[in-house]
Image 1 (spheres, helix red, strand yellow):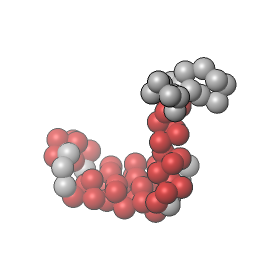
Image 2: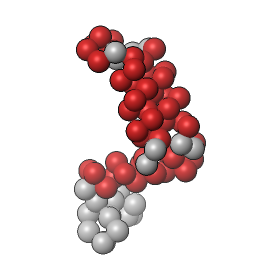
Image 3: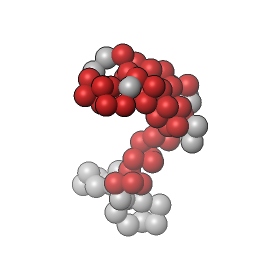
Length: 71
């Protein structure tokens, strides 16, 4: 991050939201490991997100947790 608080991508330009998300995901993966995403996916289906849980079911959280951890 630059001194003025802005973030820059790999090409030196400003970072897009997609790049920022990827960077955050990679940092989380390196900090906590791939299994972390599966664990938080399971927790997400058990607490919070009641509307999403009712719409998609708790298996949805497990599926997206595995997807996040597999990259």
